[in-house]
Length: 204
Image (tube, rainbow, N blue to C red):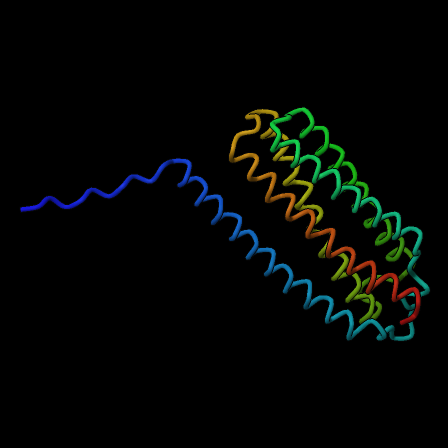
């Protein structure tokens, strides 16, 4: 009677790569669902952007130099985030902490400017309750700001992990996934800048 063949053991490295691949794929699925969310918000804004209900329009409210500064800050943070991930793959712990610290400060500056804009609008009587246009505006831009806030918290946790545990395989993977999330937010902001602010200021 022949003995059944033994199943070959999966090497730990191959098993880890398979797990990493599944994690990255799952994260891409999450990003796609976020794309659907923002697409619906953009569609809502496109329908309501002319419904000012006798109130001010985007051309009267938006300051392009202010928003352009926000945009440059966020794009720069995307660049420094990329440098941080590159340093992680090179095993340069101090550079990872330095680049992600810069990314965090830039992201926090962007969020502070966004909150300042919201504060001024509400103080001037142009809150989300005044018109359909402002409701759609606050919802779209505010959702992006909420994602930035989550990203900053995530970044802070990652930096603590790097400081305490170093650049292990799992930590580098988390940094990579975070960078995908942060670059995704930059891409969404480019659409917001173009569709909401630029076209709004041009009365299109």
